[in-house]
Length: 228
Image (cartoon, rainbow, N blue to C red; front, side):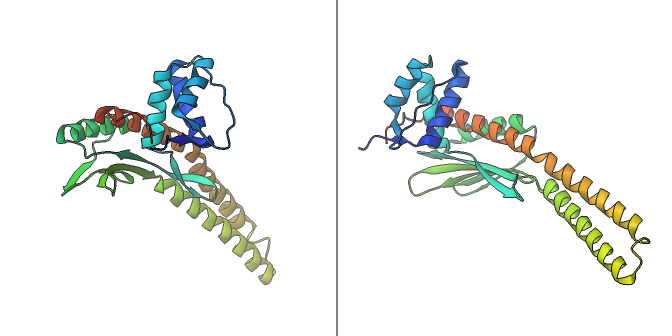
């Protein structure tokens, strides 16, 4: 069996997570071919990070994946994460995970079950337990639709201001449309800025919550160490 090697992005994520657990700043090394778990643990020892912290962090990155993002005009409109499992969750494990979801997101949500498929949803915040070819996965995703609506409406008002300017110029009445244009510009800019301004902090918070959920879910299922 080929020993699992982690790429640069995964290495950074593992060391960052492990260093947070040990409250130590890691020292990153470059590797074009990736690093094995043993090599990462050796780097961790030099940086004062315990091998156990590196192992646990590697397990989360390996099975919990890296965060995914959906962008709108360069802003993080949606985030997600997929956790790979070797088996389905038992009823008790699923119930414990749902409790964790409710506490993490401060939302009761709606639980559904259809055969081996399970889900917990609260509006745009959605979590699914699904079978795969090699086992199961828990897929978490969310999108801030309100910000998208505000940004689109803001763009529409800004576009209307341009139309008003052109129409006023064609009629030879640019002065008469000045007040309308100013109102459209202010309203459009304010709506776009408000919608976009909330996204970075919201996305960071959701990524962090999903990462912690992934770690606790892997701990619940007692996943094996990373060797593939």
